[in-house]
Amino acid sequence: AQTVTQSQPEMSVQEAETVTLSCTYDTSESDYYLFWYKQPPSRQMILVIRQEAYKQQNATENRFSVNFQKAAKSFSLKISDSQLGDAAMYFCAYRSAKAGGTSYGKLTFGQGTILTVHP
Amino acid sequence: DSGVTQTPKHLITATGQRVTLRCSPRSGDLSVYWYQQSLDQGLQFLIQYYNGEERAKGNILERFSAQQFPDLHSELNLSSLELGDSALYFCASSRGESSNYGYTFGSGTRLTVV
Image 1 (cartoon, one colour):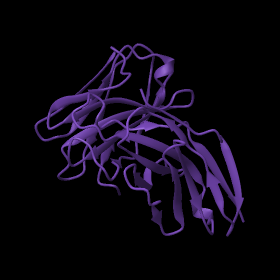
Image 2 (tube, helix red, strand yellow):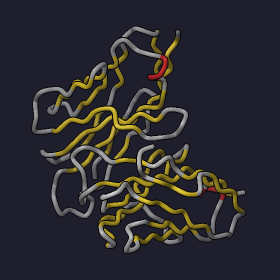
Image 3 (cartoon, rainbow over the protein chains, first blue to last red):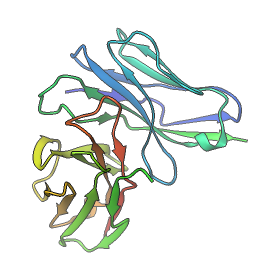
């Protein structure tokens, strides 16, 4: 079974600064997808960024980028020019790309990291 | 508005009772996923339905059951409720049996068992 670990329960950053959230995962599969979700106080789960394991290039979405290290099974999220609206709980998630498996569509989440942004 | 609608938003009930949580997926989405978010367990996958059929099952208790109806909305039934069932229950949806682009989540139902 796959597991996802976020070792930082809480992180803080000054507005306009850069912060990196860590995520490691354990899997025996070679093909999979990784995601970062944001959960603000409104509780809504919002997709921030995604990475396909077969692509070596790190995904980027505006101020958000990832450092994907497949061999190390590491998937960190970098937030540049942090804004007050970035304050939220961030979840790393894994999904198998193995079609037809009994857990094919399932997302496995880490425990989350609470990000505080200081003005 | 994500397009995934969950009702009710809040629910307070007593131990031993039964409740039904409802989810309407985003228009055109055939898969519905249910997740439980609690303080001690984090976000746990419960069950997935695709076009009316159960497709994947997680750590769902026997006291819990779900179904997806022909109009594709889904209901999660929780019975013999215990204090530990208090949690935020999310529904998510996707077009196919899974999505390479992540899932669209609803805003959740906050269940409090007293």
